[in-house]
Length: 536
Image 1 (cartoon, rainbow, N blue to C red):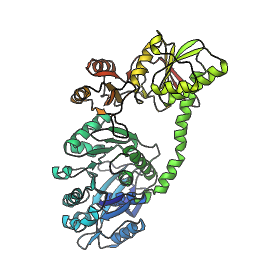
Image 2: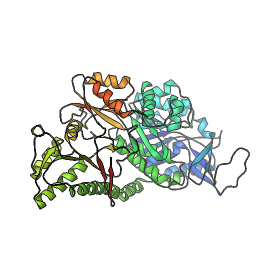
Image 3: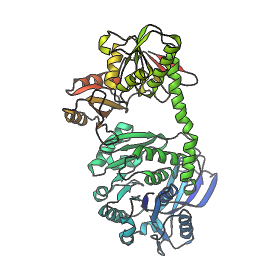
Image 4: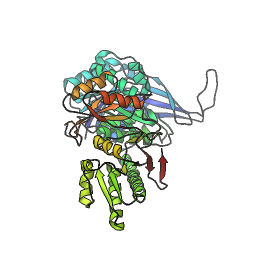
């Protein structure tokens, strides 16, 4: 169980539901008005963390009024430690006036009230609870001196600091230096870095700016699209779950609180934690309101159970594509066997057909793993050096664009895969429905480099804006390919000329191969109840 301290705001939400937002000078009727809903970014994040199982303490300031007492009772009902909550007679409990349109999008106007009275001294009076935490979360709906005080205490005791820079504003360098993890949305990221968030490449550009300030992890949320993460060693994008949004008010706060409840202290499970947080947010947006919409751990796990069929569907699509192609392979050929989980379905399917129909098919493997699987099944395998050509190769792909150009190498066998593909008279790719994309822009591209001098290639890629990252294994070692080389993952730039990129990479001394497979695929088969076939 993670020990989380949230230092932040508490508001009482006043919610107006409207059909559309009024233009300047326009008067519109509202559909409904709701008051006294709990809110505030700090309170929302504390509740999200607590409901996901974290031991949660909330440091906030409330007015000595009815709204404040109602909020206090709500925190206690969620088993949040309120022993360090501060009250005042000098201001009312904070309030937020929220307008929600028919699509679920919202705009928020905040009256700070007691939130703006939280001082550094208030926080320092509770330094013991911060010092004992695993991580401290803060937002920008309270005065900056209070946040800085909390983060100074945290850093002095080795406690991780997470800053949610909302509402967006210019931040002092001192606060950024004290921040371990920053979690802006796309608008907030642009405000802080000056770089527009348009795609994964620009998100990484934003991350580089934050890294230069001393921040070690960047998470950029992009609403219904999902969330991007980056560390100096790796980066990636976790898509959101597709749901019909009713109210997005607490979505971002739910994401942060849920993430904080799941993230390991070494950040080793970042993708799993973000997937969990995305699921939590997807449940939040389907219910009107803020704190009442934040799900519990049990609700999140139940939702994950319901979508396990999605994983099963993906595997079914892989198998459907594999079986479709296996049933159409001719007799008396040399067959290339691809790599990866989808190709493994094909290997098993064609083996069964060879056995049943006594086909005369000899095979060439594209990876050590495929070779071992085929030999275990008793298939007739050839040494690639003993043949002149392969009649057809059936393989998977990581991503395929509208031109049937693709990226391969996620399984670290790209060199062998490309060697066999180039020997093949015909190449067929089998994929599930996630793999086809309109473009390869912003996609991760593996580049295979020799270990000796690999850093030279890395520096070239870095200096030319490709945002390289060595690929690591779970044990922390650099991942090696089947041929013993290293992999550097880069990001394909926006509007990139793929052919020029391919040629440029191959020119670099130390580059063995890359994962761009251009003008190679002759036919793509997409699994599903209705198998789709796309030909070049």
